[in-house]
View 1 (tube, rainbow, N blue to C red):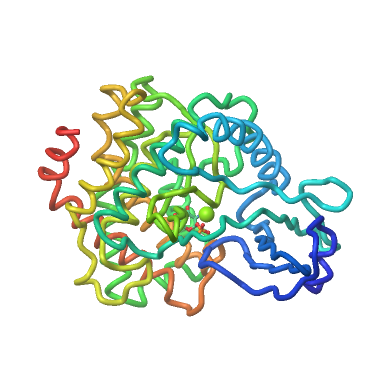
View 2: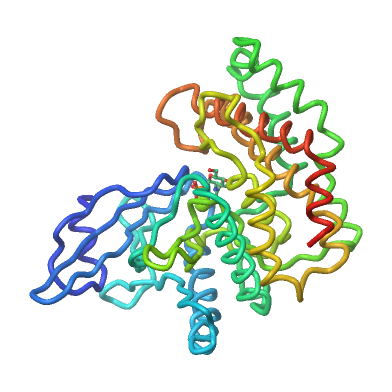
Length: 369
Ligand code: GN1
Ligand code: MG
């Protein structure tokens, strides 16, 4: 269905001027649509939810509704006292008052407002930016800390449960006919398989702490990487978390680790030059300072104990997810060339090694928070 026709299903005023792909998401298809009338302009985000990834796209919209109903009044009530205007996108409904539109092919489309005059950077811009990212995540965790998990539907069963990704990796090697061929095609891939083997025991660390009751389930964002954190163009302060599809009960450790693995380096997820992939302790310190300012009150001793493991584990896990998807024929993460998921895995595994090499310094830094 043509995008401009599809947009007509949604209740946006003015005339559609342009509609173009935007962002670098690996999962959903995202477009920016601009509407104008004589006096004003409105920019909105149109997205098709990836059915290969999200088994129940309607659940995502149910969750987004619950989240925004909970958070918007909270943001408004702190409006006068906050040091900035915190924002969260709003659902733009269809002309018949629904939160989404189903097309004839069974794909779910939704429209949300765009956070105006703000930028989501692909890489950390420096210590000040990293600190703002920390503040945004800490504030987000505070916003959702009193959202009743029972109101949410699990959007992606098994998400961030690392032993589950190991099982999927094993199953891929066993059952996908071309997987072992892909594995044996390069030294690099075989070396990566060894990297995974050496960390099998470690993979269950957070899950064990959860099972034993040492850590508890809380609301998390699920995907707080650097390019999901919006920074105000005028004040340079963080203003919003976007990409809210994976907000669900989980461990705040997944978020903490995911934010740091994406922020503390001077390279993107598709970096070709591995020597640039180094975990940057100064960026880590800056992020943590911003995060702790908002999270001091709800972080327990047990939470703190697992922060280092979280950084290492989520980095390892994302590498494993990219690697497994490469072996499976790249059926989950969108690619632009056939080896892209293999290279993405190389980058995360290299970063994981760099984190391991700095364990003592990272632990000292975290203990000082
Ligand atoms: C995916 O689509 P995107 O880029 O927002 C993935 C995250 C990964 C990320 C890595 C639902 O997010 O878990 O960390 O790619 N999202 C899902 O770039 O799997
Ligand atoms: Mg995402």
